[in-house]
Every structure is written in C-alpha cells, then in structure tokens.
Image (cartoon, rainbow, N blue to C red; front, top):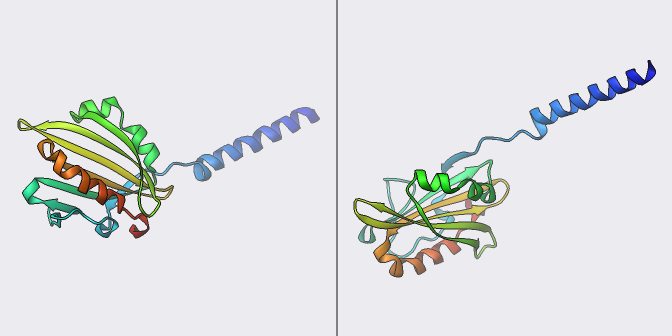
Amino acid sequence: MKFKFIVGTRLLACLSFLMFCGCYGFSQKIPATKNANIAAITPPIGFDTTSAFNGYLSMQNSAAIMMLQLENSNYIRIIEAIDQDYMDRNKLTLKSKEDIITRSGSKGKGLTFSFELNGNTFIRKMVFIGNTKKTLWLNITYPMDLEELLTGPIDNSIATANIDLLD
C-alpha cells in the first residue's frame, strides 16, 4: 500500500512538472516580424530609402534591400526551415550558402538563390543575422546580369549589419 502511494505521488508530481514546463518553461513562441531599423545596415552607394517597403532601393540597378526584424526565432532555425519544398513553392534555385560574421561581431547565415520573373533572371539573397532574441532579415534582390557589379557593394553592406540597433 505504501509503495503504491509513493509511486502514485511521484507520478502525479512528474505529470504536474511536465504540464508546468509545457505551459511555461518549454513553450515555443510563434515568430513575429516587424520592420527593422533601417540604420542597422549601411546601404551600398546608390541605394536610397523608399516608401514602397522598409529598406533601400536602387532604381538605376532595379535592386532592393528589404529589412525585417524577426523575434522569437533565430537564424539557425530559420535556415533549417528553408528546405527544398520551400524553394520549389517559391520557384527558387539555390546557388550558395554562407556563414556570416559582421564587423560588429554578429553571426548569421546567408542563402543566395536565382529565380525567373517575366523572362529575366534575378538573384535573391536571404540573409539572417542575430542572436537568441532577435534576428535581422535582409531580403536582397537584383538582376543577375548585374551580379558582378552589385555583389561586392551588397556584401560590404551586409558586413555593416549591427543587431544592437534593433529594438
């Protein structure tokens, strides 16, 4: 009888602990997005702010840098979620993956894709830089025929990212 009481009490305590952890300690928050502080990067020369979206635009190069801040997620989990199914749904072809370390010491990951739009080929760089609390998402698009001209300045701009300027 005493054995059943002890086992029952321990089982009840264990279940209570698991329920507590499920509700509070281990619950996963849904990632949230909002506009990032555009001062978090220094844009390449020729890129200006725009009212069309949060970020920078180069009209003469048909290039854009859209900026979002992600909360309740991190760049490692985000990169893992961009799988072949995601690429197929969005008609993206993966060209490269890279690790990123900014001049301020922040770490991140970058993916470079190509895609077709109205008979033209474009490059899309998806860059995620952050920590366990917040992530800067840069979504950079430009025509593939300008890749040689824009890759260096865009990579230099990415290197200026400073997540301390996010709120």
